[in-house]
Amino acid sequence: MLPEVSAVRYVTPLREGGSVPGIVEADDLGTYVAKFTGAAQGRKALVAEVVSGELARRLGLRMPDLVRLDFDPVIALGEPDTEVQDILKASGGLNLGMDFLPGSVGFDPLAFTIDPAEAGRIVWFDALVNNVDRSWRNPNLLMWHGKLWLIDHGASLIWHHNWPGADASEAKPYDATDHALSRFLPDVAAATEDLAPRVTAGLLDEVTALIPDEWLVGEPGFDTPDDVRQAYVHVLAARAETIHERIVLSGPPRKADPPPEWLRTWVEGKAK
Ligand SMILES: Nc1ncnc2c1ncn2[C@@H]1O[C@H](COP(=O)(O)OP(=O)(O)OP(=O)(O)O)[C@@H](O)[C@H]1O
Ligand SMILES: [Mg+2]
Image (tube, rainbow, N blue to C red; front, side, top):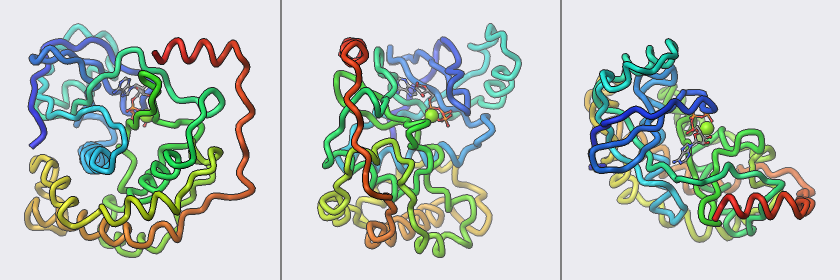
């Protein structure tokens, strides 16, 4: 099970996120980015965060820690924005927390360089979980202490919005032409060799066991939460075998122009 904490203070909404996550402090003295069940994206976005995020971590990609976050809307009664209030009031009980990375900056493909091996691992992973939310317009990557961290997997596993069509989705290409890291010559072949054999049924069982039952009960077409977990395992195991054949990276790849000196110094200073 993911560690469980309780929110004790609602600090502020993060308005740049479409689901309006919030920063909260918890009873373990930690600060978390809270993803709320009451947001428009619903509980499936949180399932996707857990499955993809914990899978990424086990494949050696950098991911902030995730926790089960107990939230009592009473602690946020001072939040003046009525749209935010509506989300918070609809989110009493179990939500998802992601460790807040203080001083991190959003990844900008024009300001940082990522080596082809790391870019390849992230592109392959995003293809595996069908993440459609890592474009250069909205990278959902943070630089923290000079390293690249993955965040925001709520829009991954898109087939879970239509389980009857999930198997067919395996045959579709993964278009990475707009991917935030496509310009860094991602070495997808090396990533496939390294990562694909590690996505075993055992690993996927371990990851899906971390999804709270509460977010799986009542899924149409399934009798129990474990049946839904097995459906995730089945689709991901199948994708791991062949997804590399369907990753579309249009060529010739564009190499980033070096950023101006003032921008590089400023960004590197912020990322330390
Ligand atoms: N762990 C973290 N540490 C620091 N900042 C974070 C963290 N997670 C998210 N953020 C900041 O909050 C913003 C919104 O978070 P996130 O992208 O997860 O929300 P979202 O609602 O799913 O966004 P989107 O609009 O991309 O769907 C991020 O772009 C980033 O600036
Ligand atoms: Mg985001």
